Image 1 (cartoon, helix red, strand yellow):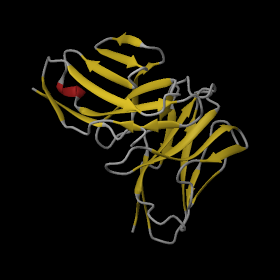
Image 2: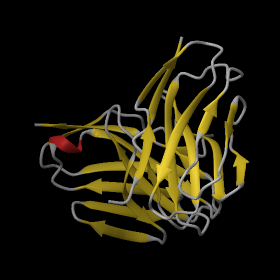
Image 3: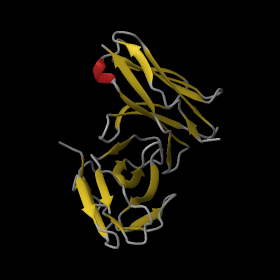
Image 4: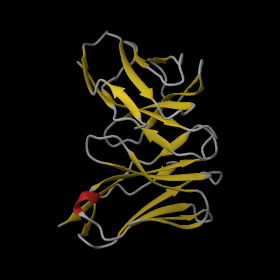
Length: 114
Length: 110
């Protein structure tokens, strides 16, 4: 079955620690994305990548970093510089074509930082 | 003005009725429109996409797009309690950026 996997499902960290969220897809999609979702707010774009070894900042990239060394993988690191990291993090992917193709989401990682 | 606006709800409909969910957008350059269903605590699931004016039907779901009036709607026929969820509208103007609304919570009453 093709799809997007994210791990772990739940993650608990202390303030000041960096944490890396995993995202893997086997849909053969070129484009991958990271969003965060907070209660009462729409999805906000953190980073996106159109192809391997290339990525761009989204609307709220401060305090986050990504890499795209393989087509299938797009890990997100939440650094200690992120002021309010507790959120639901969603990874997504889409076929190339800049918007005319559907975007599919992984199951998400719920991060709690105390 | 938000780029994509949805009534937060909740929209309550009885089982078997038609649920009508609406979404307006501000960017006239928007080209692609999507509806997602999100159950509480879960990730969004794509249920419909529409790219041209008019209606698009898929099972019990119909998406309607009116670019002149800048709105897109989703109709759910024969609503079931399992349809109770938050429905997210998303638009794209042909770039890698998708703009999401905050969602409408639908409650289907048995």
